[in-house]
Length: 143
Image (cartoon, rainbow, N blue to C red; front, side, top):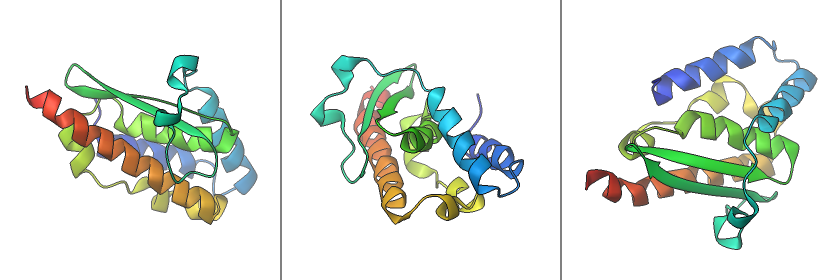
């Protein structure tokens, strides 16, 4: 299994092939969102909404085989693409690794160029929520 750092390196490599083309980058991001498995209706609840996102983002986490399994969805295509990147980075990783690792791929792919301030704030809120889930699940992982 790849580490969080290795997965981020893969994402950077994937985006580098787009050569900074804004339109291709946005389209690629939306395509990534389409690859997320659909979140069941019963998980689209108010308590699973990430606070701080302009769009609706639902996020759940469960501990499976000492790794955190994240499920997510959004009501907008670009935001769904953004959360799909985070699910890719953090899913199946140990809670401790999620808490300890820095997320560096957004700067490396120049994400600030193709998402605005509101989405950047929402993206930071998604990362924070995923780390909070990891913290809560870390106690279970130790048992």
